[in-house]
Amino acid sequence: MNEGSQTASLLLLLLPLLLIGFMLYSARKRQRTMAEFSASLEVGEEIYMTSGIRGRITELDDEHARLEVAPGTVLTIDRRAIGMKVDSTASSAESEPTDEGRD
Image 1 (cartoon, helix red, strand yellow):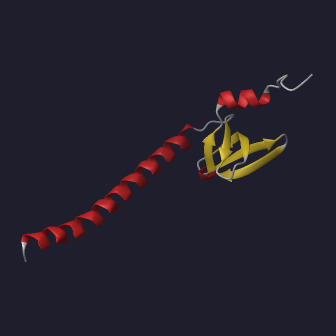
Image 2 (cartoon, one colour; image 1 turned 45 degrees about the horizontal axis):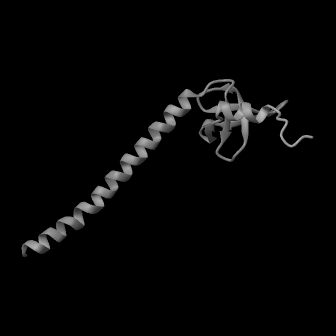
């Protein structure tokens, strides 16, 4: 074997290993971020589910959460279905009526 083919063989071995290593690193980082997010959830916070449903957390346990999505309507969901918290400034702007467009 000459030196060029040895280098090519080494690259063919190392590139897939680097790709697999990067994929594992990314997955662990994402898993850690989601675990931190889930641990930061508290009763009373408004959240969006991954399906787009918005609600306020009324109860939390290790695996499930109960959301009030409308007055008197409570859903029991898996905690992993919670996608993000509602920005408090955006929620207050939505709930305050404005006089725009009124004559």
